[in-house]
Length: 88
Length: 99
Length: 163
Image 1 (cartoon, each protein chain N blue to C red):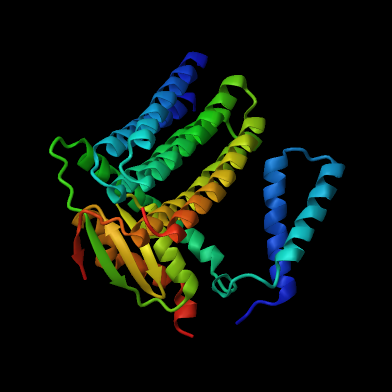
Image 2: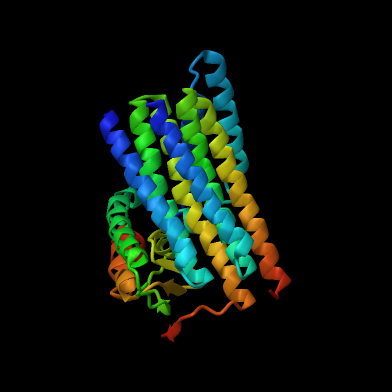
């Protein structure tokens, strides 16, 4: 069973690399923000899968909850800043 | 139960991979955000629900479902905030206006 | 009808205490008492300042709306998957300007949130009851343009729509 979850972890990290390409390459700044949002969703899933591997889901779920809430605040700050700055 | 959990996780991974392909292929910010929203809704749902099934009924299952509910509530708000900023700043979507 | 202060306080306190119970995972007396005190304190600080849209929100009936929304999410996800995996990428993105007839502010928030949650459509701008929706093609937007989603939400808010 552990092998299966390790495989899931590897697939998730490869997907994070794909989004990282979008963050580096993105034509506009909003593509980069969108890529960061996708990466954070993957990271939340990744933390929960890691908790399943180590058999400590109760602890890792708290970490991923904190990650989700911090991601919300960060995304709002970036969006507000870009909106008020006005130009690309 | 374990079989069902593995099936859910595999389906979720499929949707996550499709969403990643979508972010590579689609042409502009607005269409790409659709692909990211596909990840958030169905991909994350299937993977996390599969993991909670693997835990069996108990407090751990409830905790993972709390994270799932949080994702469902917060991700549309983030997508909307980003796209509204893009629209107000003046990124033009490749689209025909339709009243 | 505006719900009174003690009622709001009780509802918020109980909801927060439920979250505490799920997330803490320990049920000895010490942790229960700490959780109760913290939940009451946060509910006390927050009661009375909530936005008007959520003061008479029909929480129970909007839970019944969730399964229908989930079915729509699955259907449009499959549609979007098919679009992305097709080799020629047959997308026709368009901006739809939509004027909603819903009265209640919470209903409009629920409509905009549902539209964004469904893959293929995203609310770009929300001004009063005027929505600007970006859709990836006509099929994805059909749920909104035919008014089916709005009718469903009007059903949830039945009592408030008639006041």
